[in-house]
Image 1 (cartoon, rainbow, N blue to C red):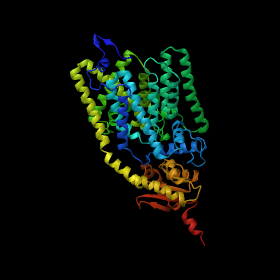
Image 2: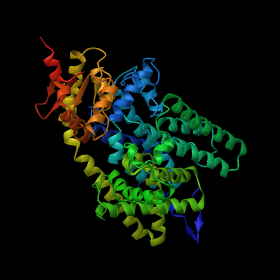
Image 3: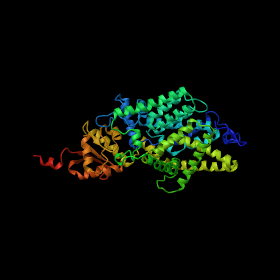
Image 4: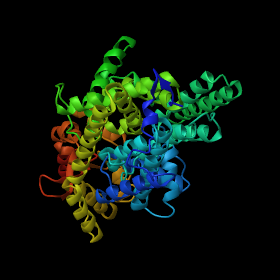
Length: 534
């Protein structure tokens, strides 16, 4: 435990539990229940009833449908319905089970349940590490973080993974050893996201440090079973698909042609990612304006302050007693710093954010002990109020539009942005006006499949029109969808069409000339077809 006396002074975490503070009475489950209720209210105010437009959301839903219908873990949206080997099956399995009772809105409700549970666990973890009073503030800041509220209604694995990661920490609080619950939660975390590798590694190292030989063997066996089992499955299902470590050493996993990096490149990559997380993604998670430039701004200063408090709290509490939470922060942060910069995003920071907030609170309490209670508590109050204010302003700014969206959705008028509403409308049209079995190449095959029930694949990412055209032919595309979802359509697909106009024929448009269009891919040049007619 953290509590001890140093230099004749009470440890600051003990001070925070004093009766003189204003949160007396929040004993037992009342305090975390209040925080969960507050989080749910905020989440409902910023709730988006429409499908999150990211491609991963549609992909998870299709995989869940495949499992639920007894088709196996397959990409049923792709021609040939091959076995899937990119996402682990944990989150799709959750959607498969939920799909028996409902659809999109139930999937979103599941995400909210996971984020609410994460708030509860954050309080319990903070209560153990820094005391009840500071736990209320730390978990409260996490409960209102815009990044958490955003993922509370998205059909993505982040909410479930965050909950499972915290569950591992919660089951090892105090002096409890790594038991079946912690190992099960760690395995579930790995199969929710492969970044759960850091959780498995944490428990292995923890049991080794504890010198518990029997539990060390069990932890190693569980970790190896998960990692090796998944790696073997991936190789058998998709032998040509890059594995996790292969993606780690790529310059850009989305552009394999960009090449790989060497061992000497990782320090520079880690430094780049670290500054991005500190200066933009961490403060941005609490509503500070996003910064993408390599300049020092108010957001960057806020990020440095928050990061410094978290680091100081981590170091100070680890010096007293290392716990699972300390190791997990170290391994997970180390992992995301080594990832390709294209993956640097607050969605990957979210799972570890509650622990960073808890250690930030521990750091703030330690600062109080250094500078004195009067100045320290005043400063800590200002920092807490500043972060909370930015979070509430950020969330509050979207409440009017989200509430209007909810009313519009209930009245049968989804409030999707035009490019997405066009994409969905084209899917519905294709489901009724294209032959069953047609293959439609498009930017988001899984999402389009949910609306069209037509298989298809992503067009090749190449600026060579002949390469794109050959890729369309090899996938057996009957149609090509020109959408406004991504810049890649204008970068790769449209130039290929422009260079081969005699191979394409417009069959339907949505949204006018600048909208979304469905083109038929002709098996031979149109001029030749016309010339062969009687």
